[in-house]
Length: 405
Image 1 (cartoon, rainbow, N blue to C red):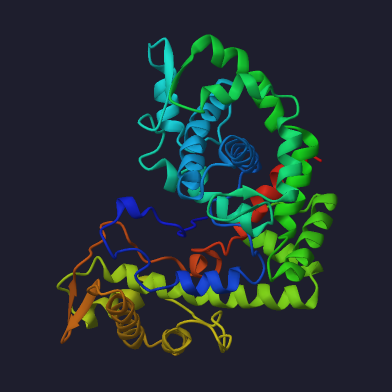
Image 2 (image 1 turned 30 degrees about the vertical axis):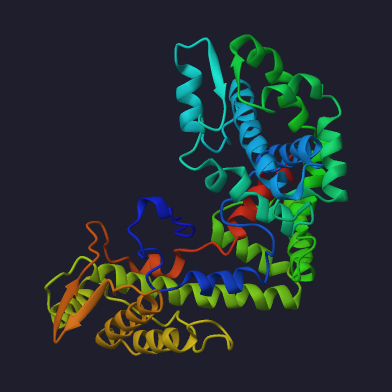
């Protein structure tokens, strides 16, 4: 089941992410049910490690002057994240952000491991590590606050529990400044650290906070989602693929949650159908629109009766998506091609960029080509999920942590 959200900007040319502007669409509906998690914040272990790091960094530099405090806290946290990564790797963790470089360093024939700002475990550790990618979810869950990621009172209480059995005088000197972590120190400290970040009371408390969506405006809907999820876990029914999980949730959901999930399902069918047409066009440079339409109709043999009669009011790009939806429901692939290319042009123009594909008369001119896009099957149009509406992370946390409680 493919999830295309959160594409890696580092691997894409400027302006080439999300060519139809669908991120704003699925984010709008996803935030109605999951107000705190992101598409990649799915590891309670990573949340725990981040919270302890913010706690220790503020212990060290919380009283620093305003002009330098955030920088000092960030730099200290980055070194801490490196130390934590090596200790976790030593204990067998598979959830480390930057595990490729950590593995390379840990398996190299060297006597010690560098802990420093120059020895980052990601190409940009501040952006792509715990500091950048887990902090927003911690803030939206009420566990941290501010640009310096200071733990709230609730976050502080959890961090206190994590740190309780750790000797800060042994750990803090290893990341307060640049240093070398010896192999002996790594082997000796790893079991202590591993046990601390996996404390059961912390894991369960943190899981409940994350899944309930505390401190966000949609907490009531997410609370309903959490209640339904707990019921499914007790019944052993939080199984199957993404669609099956949603179906089970909807079966026992409150009316408000049912409405939100119904909107998500309706919108996703249109996004999948639009992506199917648009990405197929990216393989058709210098082909005529009429020949492409003929290929879509002959290869796909599509029936669009599953598409919604209408789309929710107040959503981003509603007019463009209604045009695409109406053309597809009418079997008008020519109109759908025109509609998706127009949407792409409008989205890219708003970003100050050029459209990926244009029509010069009847001829397609593809500027961003694809070598792999293929037309999906009718079954795929009915069941594929291109975006997970933050529910993917939610379900992964629930399944990994509630089932074992």
